[in-house]
Figure (cartoon, rainbow, N blue to C red):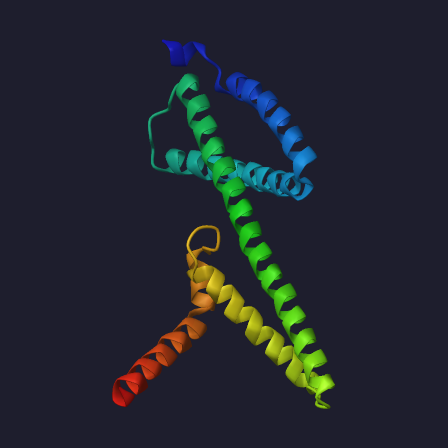
Length: 185
């Protein structure tokens, strides 16, 4: 009885007002987060409309009995909610991965610049083509380290596939080091 008398979109509108207030606080604290939130909401809106259209089309093709308007409004609302929540969470997660990689690039460029200064003091130079290679290698090592660190350094499974060669190399080097220390000792 309660579900028939309650309009989920009115409840969502109330929570939306609260969310706008929270978003305003986020905007005051961290402006890029609001851009990510806005992007996630737009993606969720488009994804929700596509999912609802596909769901209704599949139900009609399967010959499912017609559902009442009360059930349909909750069905649509739940699909929209799941799409919004998934897309916002995913965009924040992808932004975290991008920030981690950007931090690694900045750190790697600082390391290469420091190495150039140190070598210049000794009368040596790093060739231009090697600078980019070293920077990328240091960046990948830093990103791999963040990936292996617990907590905020974790990255999603798709990125694990991209850095699999580095992880394999690390395991191989660990194996070689363990084997050489076993034969020495």
